[in-house]
Image (cartoon, rainbow, N blue to C red; front, top):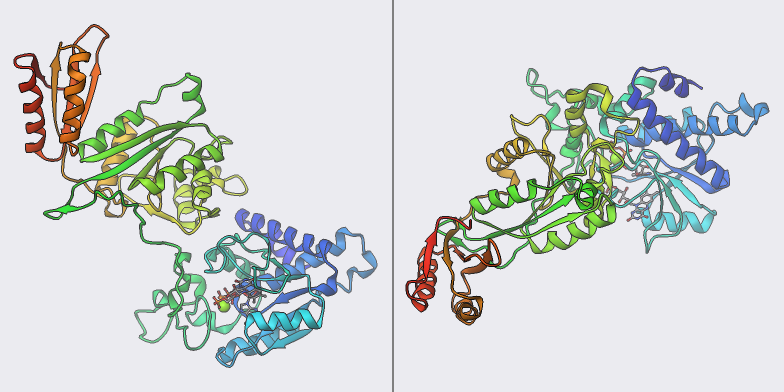
Amino acid sequence: MEIDEAVRGCSDRRLRTKYGNAVYVVQRAFALYPFEEIAFSFNGGKDSTVLLHLIRAGYYLYKKDSGDIAQMNAVKNCPLRTIYFESPCAFPEINSFTYETVSTYGLPLETIHSDFKSGLEGLLKEKPTKAIFIGTRIGDPNAVGQEQFSPSSPGWPPFMRVNPILDWSYRDVWSFLLTCKVKYCSLYDQGYTSIGSIHDTVPNALLSDSSTEKSFRPAYMLTDGRLERAGRTKKTNPKVEMNSVASNGMNITEGGQMVSRAASIIVVGDEILFGTTEDNLGAALCKKLHAIGWRVSHVAVVRNEIDSVAEEVERCKSVDDMVFIFGGLGPLHSDVSLAGVAKAFGVRLAPDEEFEDYLSQLMGNNYTGDRNEMAQLPEGITELLHHKTLPLPLIKCRNVIALGATNMVELDTEWDCLLDTQESGLMPTKPFVSKHLSTTVSDVQIAPVLAKLCLEFSDVYIGCHRISRAGPLVVNLTGKDNQRVDAAAEKLTSSFEGQFSQVDSCK
Ligand SMILES: Cc1cc2nc3c(=O)[nH]c(=O)nc-3n(C[C@H](O)[C@H](O)[C@H](O)COP(=O)(O)O)c2cc1C
Ligand SMILES: Nc1ncnc2c1ncn2[C@@H]1O[C@H](COP(=O)(O)OP(=O)(O)OP(=O)(O)O)[C@@H](O)[C@H]1O
Ligand SMILES: [Mg+2]
């Protein structure tokens, strides 16, 4: 079978893996559903062209595996029911390619002249249809939340959507089409990278050829697959969303500067909970945040477990402006932090080509394993924060930033990069001012005075700690308004004339 031979014989390991997974899904679909109750949704687009050839290969392998040797010669093609929703707004090139292709491959075509939903209702009424192959890929607006086998949505007629190329990237699609040397719609050679209707689709401006004004380079030359839909004028891919920063009601600006922002820190590490290692990065990050006027509301240490991470992220992301997460990043079994973040946001992990490029530049082909786990990032919510001093960009999922630092030096570097990168959202706010007052007055005497002071100065943080049970008590007054901190300190010291002395820090 020419497709199977072309891919298995090629040197592109990633393509071979993607192909293997996709034809496996195709074969399982043939094993699960009667052949006559499966349909193939084909529209002449590049993704459905890939799918066509995967279905042909998968069908061949399915027949081969089921020992149907007698039929093997006849299984050159796969006469699967094919549905095409034809629209008067389709490009003529798409129409002609669709008709030509079904004829070349002997596909029985059912053309539908209505919208998807009512067309499918009609189809299911007419003929039992249990499963439909669709060329949906991650990054398509309708792909979020889908799996390789996803039942149709509520409100839609009941069938199984089978998405064999769900995890394929733009580049995978072109590697496949070019490796297999199969025909695709001519529009893709004229700079179209994703094709909708004639009213909302133009060639992708990123492929415009500067030497000749009106010509465009072919679609396979687009290097950044995330810009595949740049030629689609109406619907855009919401993959990279604006930061959604939780409001804590304190983010008023003063002279253009944020007054207060709050962060929480999640440290992921079983070994910290076992007591075998100590976390010092969390404490260092608290200091750094404090130094730029951010309040840290919460530091948590959680297990290397998806649910533990997800629960903590879920709690923090909605109450704090920003959440920092340390540990549990990488290819090991215990590196589940990003899976936890994805779960907290209700999305799943999906391959990110750009991140994968960074990984392969850094580590060659050794990092991947067959499924490139390290390049899987939470789908639709991830932004990469680049900085020239970082070998790998930092990962930001809405208001959660994953830090890869494992020691102080690395933390210092990552921190400087975050401050230097506007997209991080880590803006310095009005700095805190603090006064530390030490006294030997007994707790019993000081308690009612401090309680009253807290009520009167609710905008000043008033905390106390002791170095030892018998030693002096240090009262810490921290706030954003110098005068208010001074006034609170004045009030406290005047209540205990001569019994307080100011110290430089908490020590
Ligand atoms: C065979 C088929 C099945 C579909 N099933 C669903 C579905 O279950 N739920 C849904 O919301 N949309 C469904 N859709 C619609 C797609 O989500 C999407 O709107 C469609 O592919 C158009 O994409 P476009 O708007 O980018 O052209 C289906 C489309 C097709 C062709
Ligand atoms: N008009 C249609 N008729 C039949 N199937 C369709 C139609 N439109 C979309 N589909 C199904 O939905 C899938 C996803 O559509 P989409 O437009 O994203 O991909 P494509 O058309 O194959 O490629 P491209 O992204 O380049 O347009 C298709 O591969 C096909 O299975
Ligand atoms: Mg299309």
